Length: 594
Image (cartoon, rainbow, N blue to C red; front, side):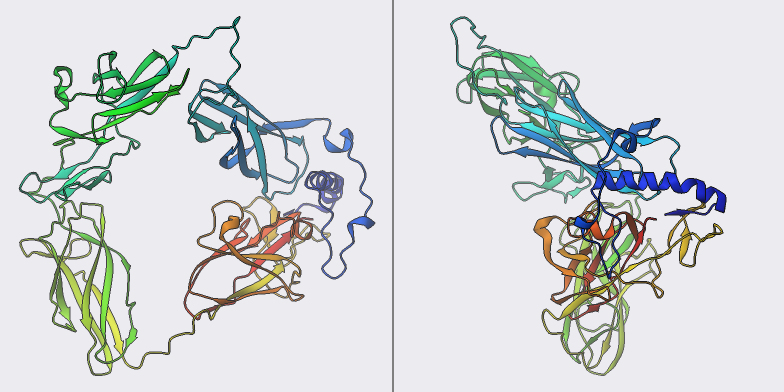
């Protein structure tokens, strides 16, 4: 990035820019960007030893690093070792990671990644990615779930057992063996439905699944965000195998949590009798987790067993707020699933057209609803297709019809609407004239592409932008949001090509942050002397083309600098490749920092 200033200010800032660049190169281990034709070997460059004077200015500014994501790694050892890998971006080329400090309070780890930069320095404004690996002190932790907060980004990990090696017992240091704990939560497993016994049920919430007997719906048995705990439920504890009671009882608190403590190692049964006098407020309903109202627990000495949970689904709760007498019917078109418009088909060919639709009204769609022919070319005998399952408001459904292409060459269109159980028609946004359709061309279809004949390729170029001696930007510069700073404009016009850059091809979508995961990488390619790369012999599908500027293969060629194309700071592009397709415009533009 560059800043347009007067010639005098440019000269005065030259020294500060040079010092900042040296500082970034020392931290990253980089040498100045090599020329493409004649790169200087590292052995020929005399790098001075960094000193306290050159590394940190006399006055500094500190802060917290911006963290975009964290990854918690549990190493296969005992005691277990836990590391946190944090990734993010530094705001400019002069800001450095100062230190990473991890502290624990109770079950929460707080990790602070701090930054430092010279005060008053004029620095390059490109974001600089960073990655920090922070070990956590987890030795001697009891079993349980722990939260990790890294500069506001949170995650968690669970220890199934106490993370300590058993100490040799000594006669002088007896231990209290009755200090194990069982705790858990009783929660309302939410599932809202319309319809009861003898009626067709419609699920209205995402937490519903088909009932085990195949009739209607029930809650899914998963404790999800927003599902409340059930207070004042009587929970019993017994010794030995289930069923067993008589050792202790307790009531759940306002959050639905319960605790049994002071326990010795051994086998226990935690149970809830929904028909007990203290629990009759649960009826009618049924247990969705663990499926019955009891569960067996085996404790080791001093173990803290958490998440011994029970999920309860009330038969008639939560109640639906839908007024079936006054609700509205409406649909939204989501996507064509097959036969795009103007698909060429042979005369008389049978085909299936599919749509993805959303219930955008307030009425649930029952199996009395159907997709009906509404006009145009009928193309077959089918005039109506009934829904096979209910669709609640907000939910989506896939509907399809089987049709036959006419025998005469030409263009044909068939229109379709939905009809409710009373035969009333409605379409997109509820209007009966807003149809969905299929349009085909009857003719001679094109030949089918050969398998694995698709290609992805492009060029990697240097997106040049510099500040002239009079302080004005060169052709090819784009100002950054009116800041007076400039970068390359992302347009390839007679600019140098970058050779020897490693390009990655991976399967699936590109990650939000960082390079594609190693397990998704199919192959790599090097750009030639013209900056070109190719990935031939590909099948149709979704791919990610990426260049990791910080990888060992590219760091000495590209850093310092940043991407201008396909977007500022972005070195990856997702490509949805069709069979036999050639995508040769997957380009990348790089602006070296000066």
